[in-house]
Amino acid sequence: MECMERISRMSRLTSAVPTEQYLADSQVLFYLNDAVTQLLDHKEEYTQFGLVRYFAEYFSSVKNSNHVLFREFSYIRATQHNRASFIRVFWRCFRQIGKSGDLLSVLEYRSLLQLLCPDFPLEVVRSAARIVLMDDATDCLMSFSDFIYAFQLQFYYQEFLDSVQVIYQDLLAGKSPNTVIVPTSSSVEQLMAVAAEENDREEQQQDGVDSSTLAECVDALCDRFKHSYPSRTCTREVLEQIEKVSYYGFLMSLAKHEGINQAIGALPSKEELLIDPEMDQELDKLIGQISVSPGSNSSGSAVGGLKEVQRRASPRRNIHHRRKIEVESDGSTEETDSSEN
Image (tube, rainbow, N blue to C red):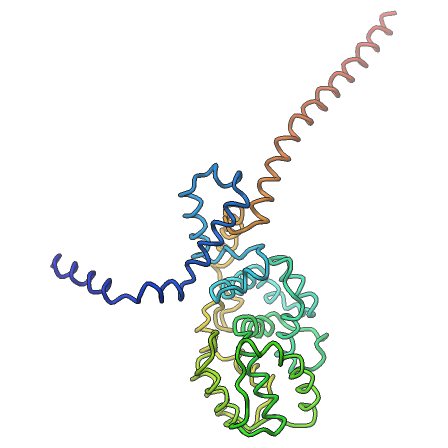
């Protein structure tokens, strides 16, 4: 029996993916580089714990999705794991808004996001709001549940959505599927500004594009796309339900699709979004881990600064306290002397 188990373990090892593919898929080198950078930037703070413990805690925070707290925007969007982790942290921290039923504006949601990522850009929040509001006035108020699923789609699949918008604009302009240019990641940013302006103007005059044609173009996009994209099965299910679809109507259907939500793995289903009795306990643990997360610049420096303030403040309070006692003592002595006289 023991021999069979040993053979089974060896079989799993030999059938593992190639080293290069594993490193690329898991982004291990990215996290290792960031861990070393953080160590060098905060050498005096982290080396006192020992290098082994530092790296263990860093990768533990990556595994537990706590590593994105208070990090810069370029870091939280650098990998799909970081994006999913940030979405989950945002939900954990602010789901109480959904439970209370509050409706918030774009700027208010952006303020919440900036509490976790100080340089989080406004345009990403606006793009998510356009999905919820179907590109209507983005100054309207939104519920937490509507916003967070739209935000998840926009933030996690941003490059894919940008490319789909360029394709949609070409179809809206009357181009045939054979002449539609499937954008690459390098060209999509240059086309986005023009496509957005044309899309806003043209979509007011038309009901959308043919769903089957858009599905064909999206399928061709997935064949050559280098970034993450939603399941083709999910996109086909959405587009097969109607004959014509608008760009934001398509995105809203994707945001509500439970299959896409499960594939990302950051949020529970909409029915369970606000009713998780264990989440309050998890939030307490999460807050407790902020101070020891090697990946959190602000938390590490804040804790170090707090300790420094405490070390400096204590002697001052003692000196002030002693002086107060001395003054009171002098005053009482004078009163005693005067009474004796």
